[in-house]
Length: 177
Image (cartoon, rainbow, N blue to C red; front, side, top):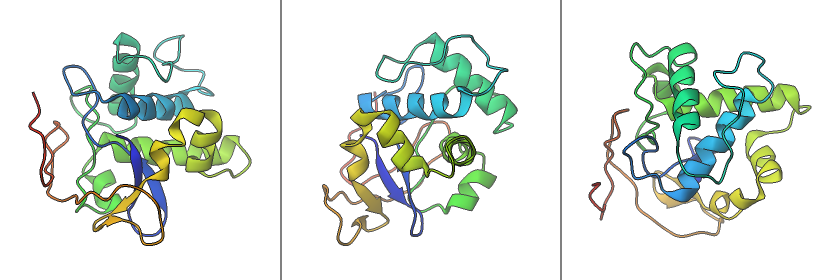
């Protein structure tokens, strides 16, 4: 389930499980990645496809094309995997960018473009305003110890590490298929 992840003080949207071809593709995670792609590409005249991904639909060829384009030209991965993995909870935001985690780059790019195109509006309020179905998932705020102090939401202990290929660790984790 998508949620807000507090790297330091400023929470950002985050996915819980990998998204992409042959991945778990949990509904809110897919919705969040699609919403970030729309936020990044909607004002871009050089889109990989004429149609933008439609948040709330299943993962398909359109999303694969946009992620491959994003990984190639923004993240600058040598070989685009088409998979968006959650950033390991133990990793700092700048490290995630440096290690070319697609999710960190999606957040970074969307943050910049939303701020420029929407008169300084921050990313999370923009996503909730533009995609109201994200209001519920993005009300859960987590950090390295669980839910942020003073915030409402379910408590889940997160930990471990991961790689961009989709592996990630978590206490009481359901094994991926």
